[in-house]
Image (cartoon, rainbow, N blue to C red; front, side, top):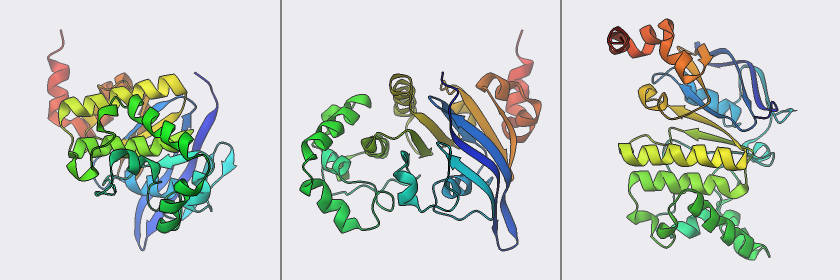
Length: 265
């Protein structure tokens, strides 16, 4: 695995009035890594994501992507560096097909103007290339059969897959996914993670995933996990290190973690 650092967060702090939501958080993501960011609701995960992607201005601290300071950049400027994110709640065009949705950049990210987002792909000479890329994205996610389904016909889990596929359209170097399996049934959730692992291994992109279900992500083959609690980093380590860390067990896994540990022979 390359040692190139694609994302460096240094002493990130975010205040909302008198509330400190993120308290001097620091971590890195390397090239070709699949990294989980976990913690309970309200621990600062989404606020950290929003600061990294430019949707929120941090109170203090530095954020570098690909060696460039992005702390004061707009979301569209950050995206042009090879940086894409999804949101917890998918925003698909319900009366458009899956393949048409992939041809349109995600709202509030690629273009500040929705109309230009709709029209530009059709007016550019590389439309055929974009269409090929759209089908390739569906192939990567193992759902090419959904290409001509209306978005309104999709289940919640299928919508999440399309949202991930759309985020891959720009050939990102770094992908931020905000709870990509929230509300998704177990088998499909595992398929999403398996496909992400495959994409990371085959393309070398880096993926940072927010996940609330800690027990689930500990079983999904991520390279490292960043554990947050009350706006701070509790620890960073491999899934095995996180699983065996007493502070994590006490903070998140509770009695269930203690019982599982006690049953080992």
